[in-house]
Length: 123
Image (cartoon, rainbow, N blue to C red; front, side):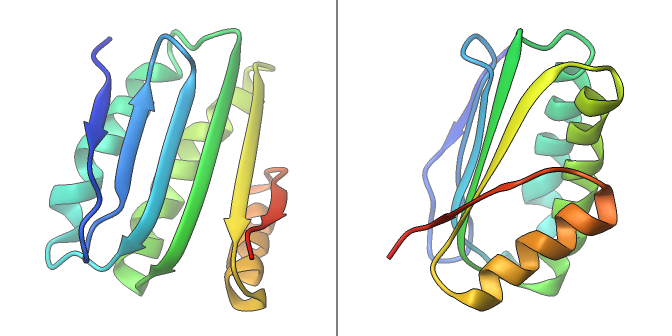
């Protein structure tokens, strides 16, 4: 499976999906003009990954800010991560946050999707 790495920009997050390490990372800002162009390849990658995951998967999400359109795609992305849980695979989701609003966003995702997050304050 091919890895995905993309540097972040003012509107798109840094993306690091490393199959051999079982590491999936999104970091930075997410306010792209066409959110589907950014997230559809990532969602497709995760769909494939969960079919043959590593023994342990680490998901690191560290947004400074994301818009509602990104939130919609992040939900779809995390729905596929939930497949790891449903298949009794080992996974960790680290939700990094700078303020309470970002922490609450992570808690909302965790509650809606019935996933367990580790919350890590970054300031």
